[in-house]
Image 1 (cartoon, rainbow, N blue to C red):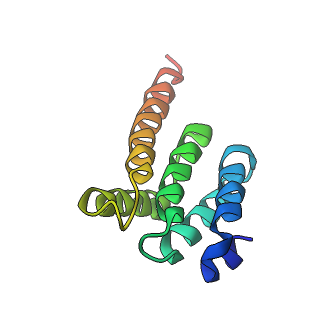
Image 2: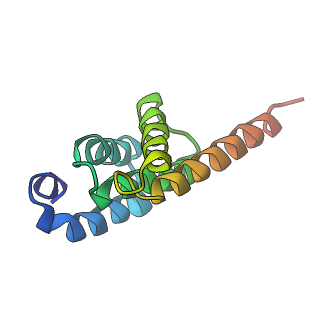
Length: 117
């Protein structure tokens, strides 16, 4: 479905539902990140899937407490594009980056508390 939506914009609505479902429910972090990165790097400028990919990376950070360097770089890039031109990437990419910063910071803090004395 995601692959089809990247070729046919009429499929974007269904692809958005699939991407959110994967980000919120799939237990394989690598697969979730793969889907978000594929969509976030291959969707055309102005596609609502771009902002959604950034938001879903925020969900991924919340659920798993970490992100790959590639996924983090993409989230930052999408947010920067959203700041420059919201008709290119919508503001959900900014929300996703806020979530990433919050949840990754929280995960690092929690890790520090779990160290043995």
